[in-house]
Length: 464
Image (cartoon, rainbow, N blue to C red; front, side, top):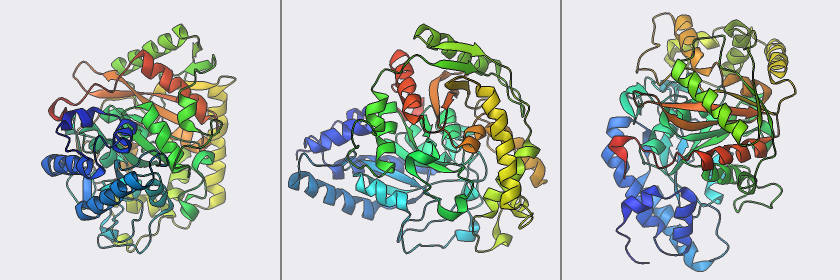
């Protein structure tokens, strides 16, 4: 393989295009890994997107990928030799896995989580672990164990959470695509704040990859990417289809089909906080564009909902995560776990069912719900910190006012990076649907992407 000196060209490729270039031997996996590792060395101290960089392991894996390129051309997985990062909530064998917490500061697991194995089977080369809020609890990534994870579009602001390291890394070009997880918006919120496409799948698409801690089924894995096609292909890999599967099951194939005309309900309000008029206007413009593309869009008022109804669900979720020592946890995490074992599965499930019934009325007979992903632009770092953990959580929870509903229903939802505010900050537009209708959300996402392309828009200080 010849040395490729066009690193900017490679960095602007999609992850799928990079895999194709490796398969065609226009670039090696080792060379591509080195390009991204060099960018991590250059920018990560500023952004704190990675908490652990596994340079030696990554280069060894890249060399193995290059040998496989020669041995079995034509039978390579979708992302053969392409760099990725793993959110630090997932255990990785032999690599420190901290879960964003002092409680796990020295934890090195002996085995990897199922998603790590699936990503490896899909051809990915992991460069390390990506920052998360403690246990994935908060929608910003400012844990005790390292400085806050910063937004490449404005480093005084949050990249979101809990997959904040994933969002920051892809937005700054430290990775072409990243793994995330989503229990209340943790893929979609960073995607909105970092101008990325993020997809939260139905629980049924990938199965329960969190095990017993996810008894309510509200948490799933998902991709943060620059394009719908990359995200769809990563979903195939996450589902255990390293080469994409057949046309019926493949997410990549689904996103490339024209969607049928859909009934869309649009909601521009949320009960837990205000919506920035700029963001509301952008969602309304997206609704108008969907009408022009052949879909029927009707605006509807918000449903009655409040954080107190949701709290038993969230407290139950957080209480299921094992901690080596609760005394080492942040005050807000301790507060969410303080009711153990008072919040039972039955109490949490009853609250989940109540909220799901209200959301079903909001969706009505429509196929799709269109909303802001988050009602406000990325907040400044430290904006929600408070000596009172209850007030801290309640202030931060407004960021998940639009996203958490699809975790409760276990249905699919995507955040689309439709533009920037007048001050140059990213926002997201959310499209969500009925459980199991992931292919429809991918198809309508791709239709909007073609109509309003976004992936050439980079954070100014990080453009290749």
